[in-house]
Image (cartoon, rainbow, N blue to C red):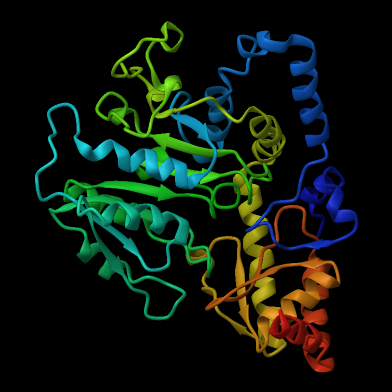
Length: 403
């Protein structure tokens, strides 16, 4: 079988030297990033301050529109920020009060999320809960892999304000039923914040079809866009209702008026910006977006399902425990494998230029992407068996113990 997506391998320099199975953590860098960073430096060097009016100022919006194509959003509904923690903080800061006809009830201050959310997101809400302004209900996982949909739905009630959920759980690759969760939240008058970090670029979806109120994510992983380019989607129905308290001059309706006093918010998505943007990161991120949009997430997903299914088969043949869902409809692009001494085995794999990672409670995380060759899956499992049989992980365990 011919794999046409392998034509893109030449665009990623690290693939010449490594078996790269860690796109869930940091996607491989496209070769064209070198050119884009040169473009940034050339713009600064030759245009100086004029660069702001010749494209830089609009980049949080124009680059946001490129992300919008990937996540199924309309133009003018996505803005760029540094990371998801900032985006979540901006969202939460909107709810001191809600403008318009839908005033927040006094008791609508509950945040519902699962115990398997990415910790950085939970830290944002836990920090705000310390002053009593919000209260949190965490829905636990019974197996550390999945979250009971029914238990999560039952936790969402008339006092729920926000439901921040991951589309794909970072530890196990479990794909959550966002549509049903969103329906329940809206029935109860709550809003949904969808974390798409582990799905955008490898799982097809549309934030419009899912009808989520917010979506956040970043470019580090499947989008191959590097660090510093997070994104925030806000449904158009909320653009003029919400007033973020985490804000800055880019959110002003007339930022160059330099008005003193309270901010007058822009009437559109720009009210969800804050201070001056990180321009270099936006330049770097665009190469990955371009490739993802050229290939299409549907094609990426088809290959991902085929290769993750093969990876599960290979792992189980080797006697390894697979700790991700076996049903492709319930998982993203990552497979987690449980073995003894997993942390040390991971370090030895990396030493051998087979790049994966380890998370406590999950195991070794493995993520083929569109640029992965089928024989690299066999190589990984073969090397894992060799490492375990020869106990070459022992040196890494000794180092870890000493340090």
